[in-house]
Length: 617
Image 1 (cartoon, one colour):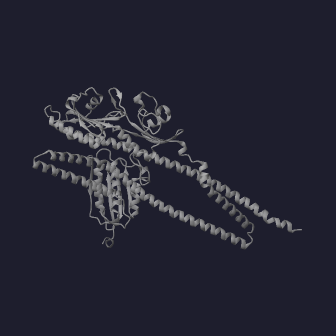
Image 2 (cartoon, rainbow, N blue to C red; image 1 turned 45 degrees about the horizontal axis):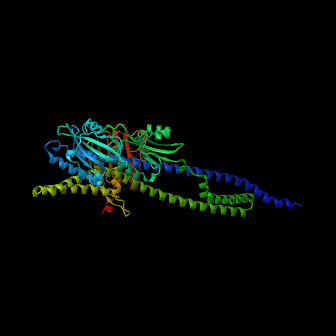
Image 3 (spheres, rainbow, N blue to C red; image 1 turned 180 degrees about the vertical axis):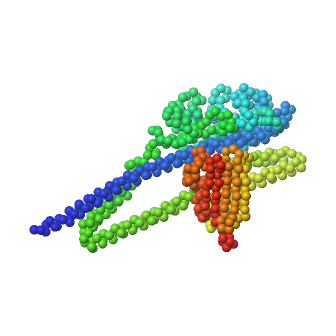
């Protein structure tokens, strides 16, 4: 009579304990799944935001470089020819020579519809038309007086070496918009005499389609939703169905009219990123040239718009990807809960308790092994990311250097071209030899520039470290900075002691010193001094880089080595320079510290262990 209640006691006890344990585990699983979904959604948003900022920065940089190239060409042509007898009435030979120079220059560049020189009365002295890749000089009888045109009067009103840039619009011929459409920007500057007096005006009619093509190429990764607008919100470039150059046709379809609140925010700020009901907007302002160099009363806006559906994670998609995983975890939790319930019910039975503990221990060991493997893989991925960041920052610096070095190479190339034509046309052997000597000098100059740039840009080797000369790295960094970032307003002083070598890749040490010196140069507003010194105390090599710049606020000193932290303008850098420097120095058991006071400048101290004599030998 007493056996029936006892036979049902075990199933009821196990079921009751199973329900308690499994309910708690199921709640934990649901919370984990919700957290997983939210993390994935947030990660997706961060990826989209970062991609938009980086690609829009590339597009802005492409336009900035294109405009600076035109301004550099304008300055080179004006300064190279302003002291000639071009404006003398009886010097037809000088005008023919200049027209030939402009014709060669137009064919080589391929982006100037017209190159013109006007005298002080507005009369064209020389005019070369691009003519679809077959440039020709306009006959003297067809040259016109442009004294009443806005671009001549605006340029003539400039001071010294200032630059005039016209609005970006479509070219108009005989009162009508040229077909097919020809986007055009006119650049102008003065040609001065030896006493600084105004002698004439040099004008370049820049084919704006080159600028738009460079922008589209730089933003190819987001080409389906990036646009370029003028200061009134009209589209200059748009991948969709919106009308480009609407202001030229009297239309009023603008971004300001379609989404006024979004446009007001974009117009009010220099750059930024924000969410609106229409999606994610990322924008940057492009000024054709700085206010100190030209009178430019307008600007452009580069804007990307990502639709909400592209950055919002789909719950159905998440379930399709993770449902097998969570079903497996559900089954495991159910099985585990049952085992725990059974173990608790039979806690007085030693054999059953031991078996449960063994199974739990095996499960725990598998999880620990899996977690250990994940941590090891994460560490390897971190090291790979650091190396990619180092190379990315290095290539950013190479891009900065190439921007300046490109024109440093172009100028002697054009000089070589002119001298070669002079040799061809000159019958006197002595003068031809003189021209040839100059060509050799310019060629060696170009070779030195290219050697420095290619040496800096090549990737790091994977073999063992070689002895690196720190002083030579300092000289390489100073040379690169002077070629690409400096003008005569900043003086670099060096005080280098005799140093032993260190065990490191010389290219990485070059990158460290270039980044540190570049940061010092960029912190100087106006004139200033950069001081670089090296010291050796028998065990460690100490480098000091001191600038007379604006200094760093105390609250920011502790963040200077954090990735993506920067106090520069949004379009001046992504904040990876000092982070990469810190990673490289730690790689070679070195240290770096920064001391700074606002208004007093900044000192960066770098230390490396010297290579022991036996290793050096």
